[in-house]
Length: 435
Ligand code: UGA
Image (cartoon, protein in one colour):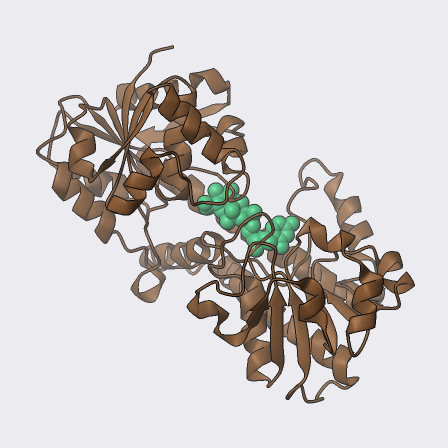
């Protein structure tokens, strides 16, 4: 395997994982960030992202001399990289269109400094056509641009990077795309070599398909509720079909996080700009919005016994606030979306999440009082609502919780708990699509 000199611009969760994992594959990696404090912390091996295995890989990379951190993209380019990865944020901008201003400013900064024959790799999720546009902005015939989307899940990013289902690389220059694909050769994953627009579209198409799968499953769970069927058995029966698969079939309070909401909106914009009405994606998003309201309806009926009962001043304990388990990420969290709706309905909310502390500062937490003790959070609550699938909720002392709540009702929007355990402890257990 060729050892390559690599620059990674941006040390967010994608950039840092990419840098640390490429270093672990033997490459010589320099990571750049604009935040001087962060660069100093990373240089000391301090990782502030909750991602299993990442801190160890960073420490190993630093100790082996294969991973360094510098301030600013220009400093990284002074190391004469053969390949430069762009891993900077592309947030949702006006009208759901991805905002590329950070990508553009990095290109502006490094344009004249990049060594000849360097390959610029876009790893951020960007609209189709961005690689071509980056090539135009660079305006250097000796520097190629390729798209190499990442498919990492938060909470298992290192595992996903080192065990990829596939590597996708697209660009107009075959040798540049092959050089990037070769960086991952050790991983032995199927590789799709294509043009840049196709590689860029793979990412949106995959994330939108996943969102569609979840909206579908959430709608089927609703139907199960109405028909008296059991969603767990229905999805198990569906999932044995290899064309469907068992993964990504868990109903919940709706999908969220920093990727699926952003990418489904961007896909709609992309289609719109191409004069195509992508109704399936529109329905996927609408079903997700409805799912959050449906959770509130479930809570309302559970607590008041009526469809139009009032939640005003009702104290509710929310278990799990992050967008999924295993992360401390609150971005576009369905749990917080449900919390905001409950708050609008007048409920008083106390939340517990294993990754959060009462002093966690986040504007999205404004509707919830955070407690670091689940038993304290549940005290005098009129219902416990499980919103994130933290496995540790299963091993709480449900008997003790039953004694401290006002009403022993648990609305389990993740179907996480064993209903028999909850019922034995004295709780009325209400799940999704469960008779
Ligand atoms: C998602 C994709 O899964 C990754 O492949 C992709 O690389 C990443 O976006 C990205 O574009 O960067 P992630 O946002 O980390 O990864 O989260 P997921 O694990 O996909 O979960 C998304 C949401 O769906 C969460 O709210 C989760 O709780 C929910 N979910 C997931 C369910 O409700 N049920 C399931 O069965 C699975």
